[in-house]
Image 1: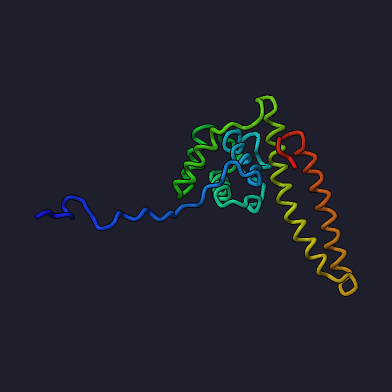
Image 2: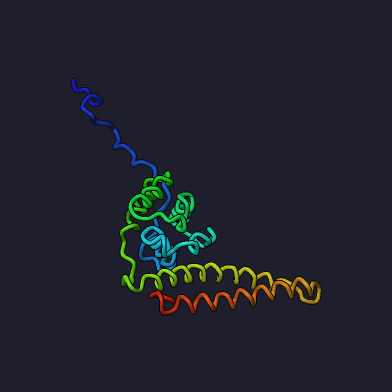
Length: 188
């Protein structure tokens, strides 16, 4: 007779492997655009992204793939470390345990930034300002929520302090928007 196991036949086809990696972002998602462009700038032009990129809080990256790559950039010494080129990209990739993220680093390291060579410094600055502005907007929403729940009559000092923080953040956000406008497309 026939030995089905020896011939490679099975009762059921093998199950596809379970995805274990970090989900990859949709490159066309406009909400993730500042995160993607900031990571691209850090990989391709770390000297332009520099200490400003390095100083961005991890909360700026809402997608786990971009957050993971940002962490790997920091672990590799950050943009201000003076590294660049293929060795820089390799060092960042080596800091990632996920194959999908390593492939994404390779893609972002060569994906075109939407600016001419002459406009790159302003573009990168605008992208980083936009990324900060999105994060600051979230901070503002949190503060507004806290201020609305407070009673100025019950805690006048606490209310005044939070309201002062809110005004300062709003002013900072306006400055970031002014910096971003004109430097980057898709600013809304």
